Amino acid sequence: MGSPIVVMGVSGSGKSTVGAALGQRLRVPFADADDFHPQANVEKMSSGQALNDEDRYPWLDAIGQWLGGHCGDGGVMSCSALKRRYRDQLRRHCPDVIFLHLAGSLEVIGRRQASRPGHFMPASLLASQFETLEPLEADERGVTIDVDQNIDSIVETYLALSASRATEQEKK
Picture 1 (cartoon, rainbow, N blue to C red):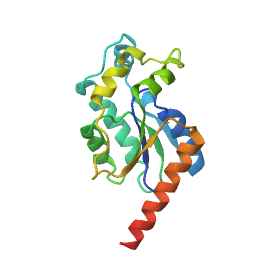
Picture 2: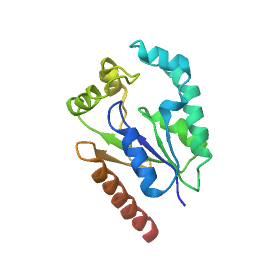
Picture 3: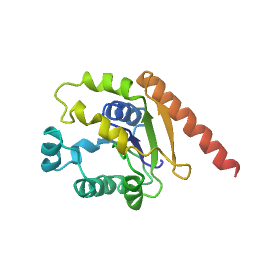
Picture 4: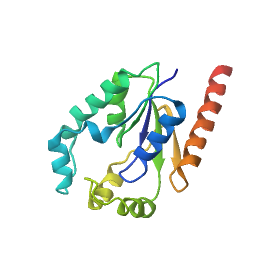
């Protein structure tokens, strides 16, 4: 079927919404990385504290195990995956994972995040997420798409870019 896809980006970028739409469109399972956080992480973020790498590694391993279970048959996971080393940790479980980075300005994503009452990630941590973010590098499988458009457009853009890259790979 295909490689699993991680829809990545800062909090409020639309990872869960786009990920669910993409999973439905591709007819593959969708999972939200937020559901993989241990309670201690949720409590820490809810109190306005950013997670450190020690907090993230067990969480990333759980996500990586899910991805590893979907290598070959496909799946979509929403996960911040803000740093290269986090994405490398996910790739250890499934080397063929593809990343879809939902990128946008602090202002656009701040407006989106403000419209999500009750989410455990407070808006006060958004700036720290932008500071932590390491965009995809040239040697990483994936694409970056601007979030300042509707969900269907993001999904269509991703599918068109994926089809184009697959055609390029076949020519090589």
